[in-house]
Image: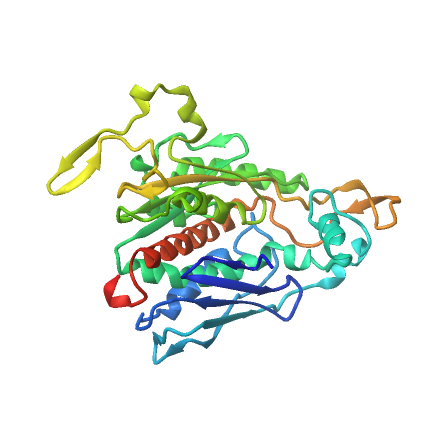
Length: 361
C-alpha cells in the first residue's frame, strides 16, 4: 500500500535504507524508446550521497542494474525492472536508537502503524528510497525529450538566503556548476558558506527547490480531482522532508488584484500565448502551454549531531544522541528528485492524453 505512483506511466518502488537493495518497477513506458543508460547513471550521480562537504559522507555509487523491459537498447513495452544495490550501510550506527523515537522522524508513526520498525536509518521511511524514483524519473525524462519537454530544478533558498531573481533572468544550466546547485554564482557561495557553518555547529538547515517545466503542450491534465497541479503537489509532497508546495504566483498572488493577476491571452503566429504567467502554466487544472513553475520547501534534516530528549517504546524519557552520516541541508541532493517526480507526472499525463505508442507521442 502506498508504494506506487501514476496511472499509465506507473512506478512501484521497494527496498529499505539498510537492506540489500532498492528498486523500481516501471509500467506503461511505450515500446521502442531508445534508452540512454549513461543518462540514467548521470541522474543517479546527481542524487547520490558523498558528493561534497555539504552532503552526507555515506559512499554509495548508486549503480543501476536493469533487470527487464529493455532489449538491444530499446524499451519493449513490458515492465522495466531496475535495482540499486546498497553497498555502504553501517547499521551499527543506529543500534543506540533501536527502541527510541528520534524527534521529527517516522520512528513513532511507523511503530504505531505497524507495531514494528526498521530502526536502521529509518528503513522504508528513509530518503534513500528516492534513489529508485530518480532512476524511474530518468526514464521518464528521456520519454519527454521526444516532445521537447525540458525540466530544470535548482536551489532558490537556503535558510533566510533567498534568490530573488525570477527564473527567466537566470541561466539554469549554471546550477550544475556548483555544489549547492544554485544558478547564481554569488548566491551559491553564500549558501555554501551557510550550510558549512551549520554543519560545523552540528545542526541542519532547510531550503527551497524551484522547478521549471518548459515546452509542455497545452491540454495536459484532468478535471476536478486529477488536476495537473494537484498531481504535481502530491508528487512533491511525497518526497521526504517536504513541508510546502506552491505553483505559479503561489502565496504571493494573494497580495495582487485580479486586474493585476489575470494572464491576458494574445496570438503569437498561430499559437495562443499569455502576456504574463501568474497561473504557472496551468489553468483549470490543465496545462496552457506556458512554462509550468513551482517551489518545494524542505525542512531541516531531522537528524542532528546533538543530544535531544525523547521517549522510548516503553514511554520512558531518554536521550537521543545524533550519530551516523547525514546531510546538513538536503536541498542540493533534492534537485534531481524534484525533477524526477515532475517528469513522472508529465509523462503520465502525456500518455493519458495520447496513446501508448511512442511514435504517436
